[in-house]
Amino acid sequence: MTERLQTLTGLAPTAKLPAYDRNALKAGILHLGPGAFFRAHFAPFTDDALSAAGGDWGIEVASLRTPDVADNLTAQNGLYTMLIRDTSGTTAQVIGSILKAHVAPRDPAGLLARLEDPAIRIVSMTVTEKAYGFDPATGGLDLKHPDIVADLANRHAPRGVIGYIVEGLARRRHKGIPPFTPLSCDNLPSNGAVLKRLVLEFTSRIDPDLHRWIEANVPFPSTMVDRITPASTEATYADAEGLTGRTDMAAIETEPFTQWVIEDHFVNGRPAWEKIHGALMVEEVSAYEKMKLRMLNGAHSLLAYLGYIGGYEFIRDVMDDAALAALAYRHMHAAARTLDPVPGINLDDYASELIARFANKAIAHRTYQIAMDGTQKLPQRLLEPACEALAHGDRAETYAIAVAAWMRYALGEHGNGERYELRDPRATEIAALIADVPRTGPAISAALFTLPGLFPKALTSHRAWTQDVSDKLEILIQDDRLPLF
Image 1 (cartoon, rainbow, N blue to C red):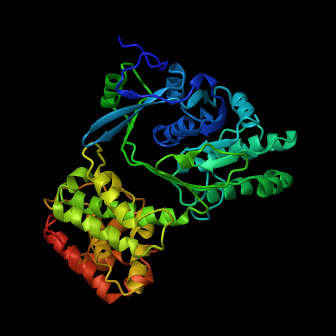
Image 2 (cartoon, helix red, strand yellow):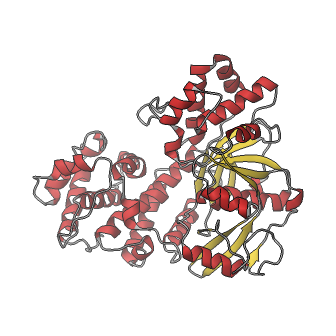
Image 3 (cartoon, rainbow, N blue to C red):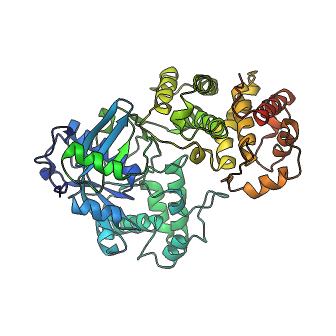
């Protein structure tokens, strides 16, 4: 049996290793939620920054729920392998920036002790959107969320991410210790602003003085992360072993592309992330979020709907259709025309990078997965920029194609009559709207345009554009695979 990855000595020469003295490294970051996404961006960026510029910015991680990842990292002294997969092959980098792993339910007092340690200057997190305990309708606290309920009732023994952050900051204030910088890396628009609102709303309910101190002294920088990270499989572990010579049960795989945009507002220092390719330290992140939503996510949705109804399982398969690949590129340029200049980004180059990412044969991104939850994704990705395009005299044709493709997907059946589940929170409403409607482009589009709260009036009142959607939907109903251009 192959020895487990536990040290950096004796590894296969095919693995890239840290270029710093790991034994001398001290922790300066505590990260909540050590899942694959964190291990594919935050930890490698910090690892490379340590190699480039040093500093006491080692990472301790803490799982607030399940122990599996933390236990695997503990068994491997924090080491793990990141596989970078491309059409041309796979490379391996052993990441050494993680120094210790905690499991909060086993030792909550230990985690609180780390939160109040002055050495910890950043508390970052990737805990998924659901863990924050916010109400999407108001943007504030969800007072029915179990963690919020529990932590408001017993603030000194937290179990949720907001509770832990608040208690950690409260202990620092009480002891006269400078605050840490809370750094959200979850896939939430304006994630730092969201986190700040939740923390301040929480503290306003329990301690007005703490509320004022946090508001005056604690920055909440927003970030935007972009890197595809599929779930690890047996092939992941086998390839990690082949490229390192060690068994690695914490190995992850990802794509070559990586982008991390970070608002440079930190209260007590940070690693030299700006020295690493793919990282941008900026004053404000919203322009980059809009770029990603409209160029990447919008084109992704377009390809997912056309690809799924056309019988393609993966985005990489859709990209083998030259006409669909050209359409994606055309849509990206249409989306770029709705954007203000994005500092440090050439939008033509960005579009070319996206096309290459979509075509990467080593990344299996299912069209059916990307197509889910369309009513939540369409507004930011497609409908808002379509309104802007039309207002500036653009035909918004690629947006019409994308909306027609979503409507065709919303029928819930393939051209051969085979049914599939429409995975959308409003699936029942959609089904009711079209249940007794003739299967024609004009009838289906007219029905779906009435779905409450989805389509802006600027679109539904634009006769030329709605007619374009209707015409394109009719083509897709007649032939799922017929090009629209």
